[in-house]
Length: 85
Image 1 (cartoon, helix red, strand yellow):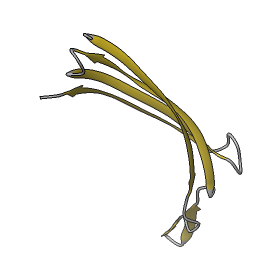
Image 2: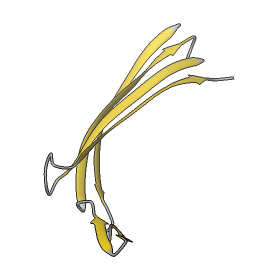
Image 3: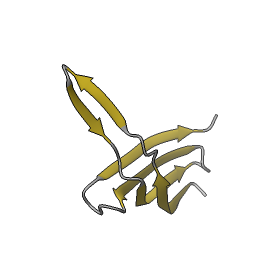
């Protein structure tokens, strides 16, 4: 086969550490802490050429806090080119 297409779907869950970060600037304290429980979904795929010698791939995922759904979120993406020698 000269070309091919592959796809994938992923589910993501995770927990962060409870301590967060703290800093004191000129006597004023600042603190940041992520919610502990997160979830997300992702979708990715690849387009392969020349019997998988060349591959263009990509993935995108969206994550959100499950405790404050939609208030805290992240969106990640990856795109690349893979060549087999």
